[in-house]
Structure formats: C-alpha cells, structure tokens
Length: 251
Image (tube, rainbow, N blue to C red; front, side):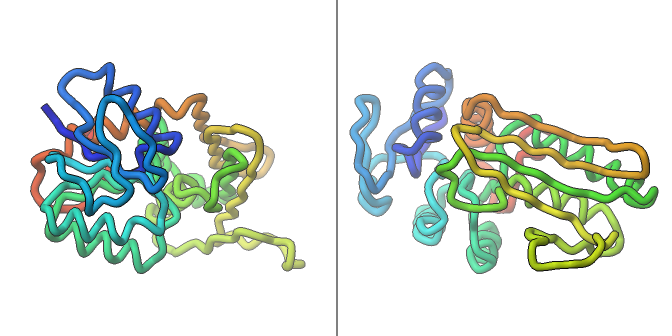
C-alpha cells in the first residue's frame, strides 16, 4: 500500500487526486497539507507540513511555487520522495530541487499527462529535421483565467524539447510588441492565452513554406494530470535518490 502525503490538497488538483485515490487500489492519502485547512472525511488536513503526524511513503505536491522551498526542506529531512507538480519555479528553486534530488528521489514534470510526455518525445525526434528544412517553431498555450504563471511549465517543457534536440541554441521570444523586425530563424515564439475555464491546450507549430505541421494536445479534464500524479507516486515510493521524470514512469 502506497501512502501519499498530499501537499496542496484543497486546490483543484488536490480535490481531483483525492477523488481518484478513493477509487484506486493499492494507494491511500494518509494526510493532506493546505494553508486553507479544509477538512476531508477520509484523511486529516494540516495548515503546515511541519504539523503532519501521519506516516507516508511519498509526497505529491500540487501547491504554489512559494511553498516549494519549505516542502523540499521537509522532504529531505524526513527522507521522503517527492512528486513535484507545481510549476512556475524560479531558477534558484530549480537548482535547490536538483540538489535535493542528490539525497532523495524527486520526480519533476511540467505536465503529468501521458499525451504531453509522448509529444515531448516526438518533438525530440522530429524537430531537428523540420528546423533543418527551414520551418519556424511557434508555441501557443491556453489556460483558464485563474492560472498565475505564464507561459505554462508545459509550454516551456515543449520548447526545451525542441531546443535540446538541435545543436544551435534557440532563443525564446515571449513578446514581439516592442520589436519592429522580421522574425529571426533561431528563435521559438511562445504565446500565452488566459480565459474562461480552459484546462490546458498546447500547440507546437512548425510553419514552413506553403505548409504547416502542428503537434497539439488538449486536456478536457484535470483527471489526466491527477491520474498521472498518482501513478508517479506509486512509481517513486521506495526509489533511490535521483531526479526522475514521467518518462521514467511510462518506460
């Protein structure tokens, strides 16, 4: 039985994970942490992670970037693996996460869905061929109007997949309003749309001469991310120290 400590249990994803775990065999939520302190009938909820009294095998985090430093410190102290799903981390937090992974197992993914991670692998294989053929790469991501960070972590992960597949580093361009010049070939444009209740749409567009190829992913429910996080938790529990990704879960 895998026991999860759910960090950020009262948010939208926390609710979704709670529902999925209630119907999943071989996994339970032993405790939750959330600043709002909402009460669940199935497990106790604490306002801070330091108050947690219950034992766990792995932490699943869907909180906010500002809570990640304390989470990593707690996980390292307790020797608990962490599935880190929160996006919008600063470079300093990313470095701290990588250092923490030298002592405990940390799984970091900008997106927990199978489909997005499959597209990342497809991009790594095909982006070099398309860019060499003169195609321009642009990424458009769309999310609900409550999302705090832009561009999304998934959009950056998709851009990184393209960038890491080629020899020459491409520049990320987030805003062209202050530029009056032609598009440079060695760049990836990343645009963010915020509105309504869009769960998550991502388009990686390769625009060539007289043809366009688009790799698209549409999330119609947060359940795809929650399900992936639960599978990642079951995978990570008991793993040795190291930095893992959804690619490891899906292997």
